[in-house]
Image 1: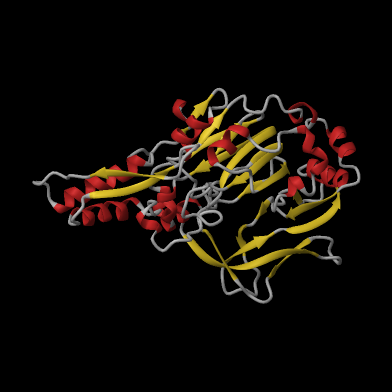
Image 2: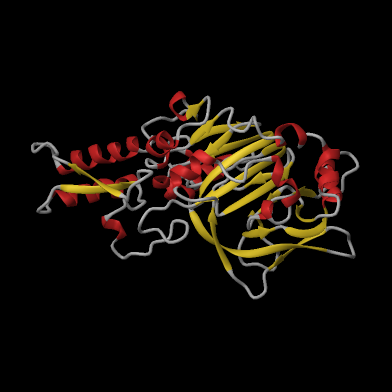
Length: 384
């Protein structure tokens, strides 16, 4: 189950995330289609009601077999799994649609539950799985999995908790530090007065500086002597192997059991360093991610791909923070030339003042099944 969105405030301070693509035939890059007939080989990501209606349409076909997904064995080509669907003849069309709708929801774990759902025993492993089990039970059905005791052998788990070690190892390395007024980078914020929209998609101000100074700014956020600006090292684009290569010996270059199951090495490895104020806004991600926390913890909310409609993805004007030399503060400006960014409209943690209005505005999210919740701690890996 790939997440339609994830929202995860983190609490001190280091985590690695590897982006991996499945080696399925019909995939070009991450989640991109390279065949006009892919819907005949791999189930299309749709909401449950659409899936139910499509199943009913398929009943009239000469062949009542529906291709639902591809499975990849470690040593073979993709296999297509066929199922036969035979609905009860006496039931009405409405009953059939309802039955298939619930069946589709339950297939992705989105039954009629309204309480928060924590990661269960079937989704939590106490030790790394074999490649075959990982592929069969989690990769093929797109199901998230939390693996404990996954990185206890990494030197990083002991050495990265010491600030002086990191400062010495990266003493001469320049890194990218993302700055915002509130810790919400790449998120929806109130738009500048010059915009016709009430909200905009704001990118952070990226400051290039030596790592020891970057670490000092991250750790000082929220203190009485801080400037009010929240610093978050969240550069992507394979930053661990470029900006933080001096730390490469402290952890494995890839996760062997995952690489074998997926049939490829990580496309990108990123190191993110934050504090209790750092947040990642609700979003959808087409990557296969292995998320390893080295120090601290990070909390996730996860939705299945079939729930993407509940995120209310809309177009918002793009903006960015810049540093004002006059005021010494960050200033929000609209991008020039103007452009729009599609982004999730839902804030899963609305303030008490706006909660009722947001529930009314986004009923599919707030009145629907609760997301899967997961807190990843040091030494654990989350597959999503």
